[in-house]
Length: 244
Image (cartoon, rainbow, N blue to C red; front, side, top):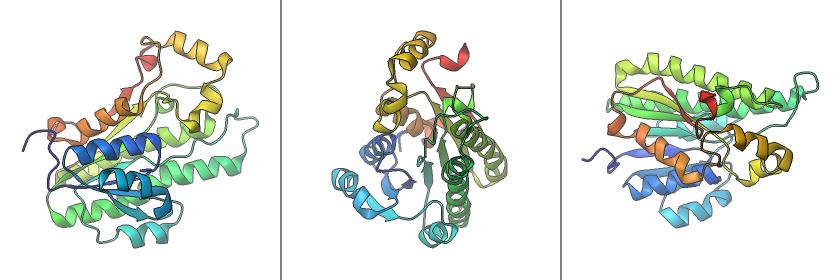
């Protein structure tokens, strides 16, 4: 088996109907993985599953019972926690606490629930495995207006490190990727504004937005045997923005 051959490995990808999640599903399927594409509804997953042959799995990340029912006993080798909520652009003074709670519930608590039940199955199978959490550059540097999103992703990075510490004894590696902005519909409403994108790209050494495939590639690396000695890291995929 080559380092990027996932034949015989079942990998769950949450947020599979989204841009980055879809790119991860496509790259995993092309590398031979048995991909389970997860989202809130099977209808939202129909296109990516038809394109790649992935198996759909619908559950609600905000519901403990829904996640447990979907994942308990499901045989998995790997997991990508990619589902996310961008929240709002707000300062700590004017943030909507209900929005903050929702973002934490999806981005952090939801990833924890998936990790909880997926890792139980991975330990039971005794084959090791890998978990990759799709975090953000907002966990590494302060971004204006990102009090909810940045907090949720910083907590996700902390969860990544603790999970790596706890699961390493079972041969399970846990890492994060921390992407810069990908110009998806979810991000364009804010990052596409002239007063925002100009100064941001000027401050980034590579001076451009990332593509979905440029985020999926490092995710596959961290899942793969090429990263067999890598665990507990937060890998910036941000064009150098966080090195300023």
